[in-house]
Amino acid sequence: MSKKTNPPSHRVYAVKQESKQSYWRPIGVAWPHGDGDGFFVKLDFFPLNGADIVIRRAKGAAVEEPEETVEAA
Image (tube, rainbow, N blue to C red):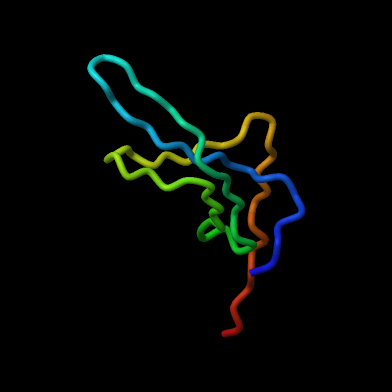
């Protein structure tokens, strides 16, 4: 896979619920695939404590709409 040069559009978090408090730890970043059907994800950490993995749009990030493709009939 090629190295991404544009800033990531999303941040990846490990979210752990303890009692009434949620703890959000940033663990990586994500970029949308060119066709819009998925993400390229780069994780710096992998939670082993049963945390949920949540992907949220990065603040100030513009998410490009995928280009429409025309299928040949």
